Length: 272
Image (cartoon, rainbow, N blue to C red; front, side, top):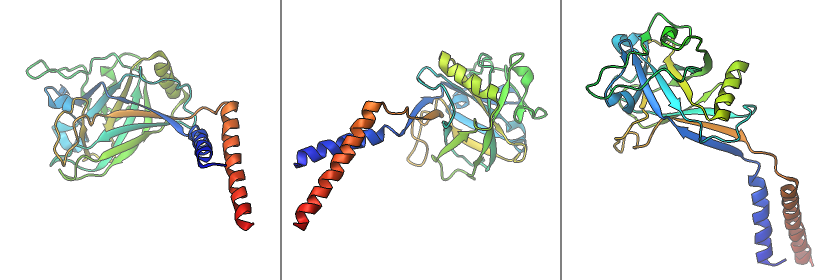
């Protein structure tokens, strides 16, 4: 067997193996909001940064809202063996503090959560209410559409203290494995229809001093030590690749078999 034939068979074998990998699709947040006791944080910093701060931060306590379009996702029909990841890039400052943050999926995707532009009237559709903890610390369900549901998707650790280092990428796995059937069904329904998804990120009640600081959906500035421009919140769905077609399996087996035969012949020739 000549070298060119060997290379061709090797390529075919590798292509067959590659078909067994996972398929990942990612979307950047179309909007982010920080919900304070007074309403949604306004001006440029309202969307440039995405902070989640516990009740220990008094008037600065807030939870965050992230909106994602699902039009870029395709072929996601099951969450079995799938991994859903929320990626947030740290944009740390002097008040950054470690703690736990919680994740929720809500069915209310229509309540306006867009921060007012600089100088505009503050958007007060949503407000942080420290006494309301049923759907995440500060999430006042009365602010949302009547009948809106909130599905818990687990929590994650934020470990930084102070302004440095910053720019780190934190990947949080959203726990659909233990989520309710309703949560999984709604998530898949929205993707199938190309509808929006809204995720709430809240401070955990057990770490009231947490001040998790990230880049928001409109983050535009960065330095060598800070997040790079474009470091937006991202949602990634990784699903197992579809089983290869019989013809693909045949190519893989033929390629691997031929390579094995070629190796055996070389050994026989060398022995002779």
